[in-house]
Image (tube, rainbow, N blue to C red; front, side, top):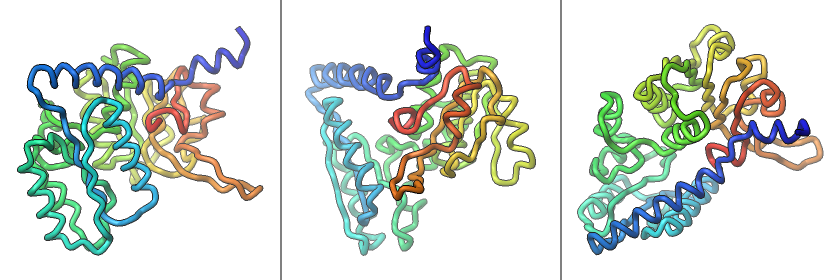
Length: 275
């Protein structure tokens, strides 16, 4: 085997795993339609015109349709008052055609994120960010889970199989990724450590990891000497880096090329956890 083939085998193909998952969900959606006469409907709400958020929302609609579900888009102006947004959420909560609601984050500064997210009915809070679903996750109960950590878990399970007994280190303690990721891994039987802004020696902690998950949003924060030989690395971060020639490229939170030398498996950026 040529060296480049060996390295290629280390790279976790998030796109391929996502395609297989979409096919599986599409089959379940069709079975649900045949059994109930209903087609699952996802409502996505975007306030403002943030370019990155617009791309995310467009991709969510595409993936919803690919899975055989219905997509309902609500594009609201930046000036939308909180009362208007809460009224829309109340209508979506009461709409039988809507089975899930996503409010795209971040919201404009004049809107209270916690109030808005917790206005979504827990059974329709498919992002799992409301207090009810977050609480259920922390107690090890079933509920809706944020999509990014759930996707990371699926990548790990597809790559490693059982995770029981492995030491997982998560760099980043956000409510969106780090904290729910820790809860999901605990449920899988991992020993879990979280490094955050006040951690005194994050590199030393990272070097103990059988599984290293990085979700900070800082370009190439993690050098290769933070990676334990044979570790599995999941890079959640994505940043557009300016190059000397005036062009740009997307990079993750991990220095990929160097980490590839040491890791057993690693996600690329793009093409890994965020596809």
